[in-house]
Length: 338
Image (cartoon, rainbow, N blue to C red):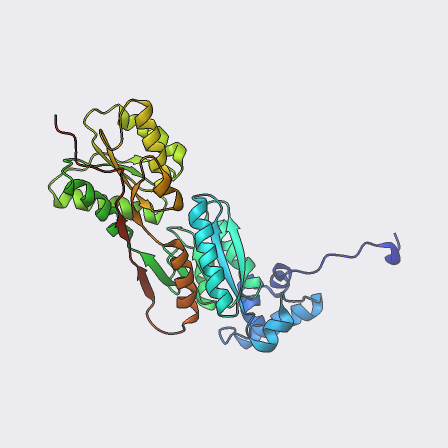
């Protein structure tokens, strides 16, 4: 095949430049952003590889001329509650738009550090000015630390890195408020349908439940783990329905509470006549459940917009907190006297 008839080769990537220069992709990104954290010899090798390969940095003309892309990256988890994802996204996009920023969204399919690394690298390659992480990974890697050290980052109850700022909701308090509400109604024991153990929020809500019961001198029963879905709540609700002494349940999310309520009713147990149920989130459907659901409210939209404000606010505290509050509806009542 002659040179004239050969197919054109693909455009070189940042990974190609990194291999040619013998450095990491993050080092290439730092070099192209003129970071002071790159030594002169490394910078020389990277720029030589860029020139040799003809690499064009994403958004290069805009970013390298002004030092800013006016874009914020948002990392979301593909699975989990649809409402929380959409509300956080709406809050981030609204606040970013008001500040003159676009939003680039990277969605990962599961709680996996490799997926997180690739998403953060993708956003770094795009030259984003900051990143909001709304993924509840408990562990982080050195590569994630490197990226969040280079690019201003705010996490929403998610991955804690040494350099990221944290916008948290006191999930232990959410667990305590929900449990205390049931105890105040006169229930002598509160069962718990928890979220997945690998989620920070699930662990903290479970801890709040345990602490509240301990303060009342009550030994917590074994938690029943779900996966945030109504289906998992339904499965655990079937278990709870077979325990005659169950009169109160704290479900770690509204969607799981929906499943618990259905399972109890299928087994002939009424809510709240036989069993009271309280949960967390206060999604839009909670008020239209039958009965309307008592739940601890957390404002996902406000969390998204507050994350952008924290990200763009420059200095100040490395952490901020959003409050929770109990919304009492019809799914909870004093225990039936026998």
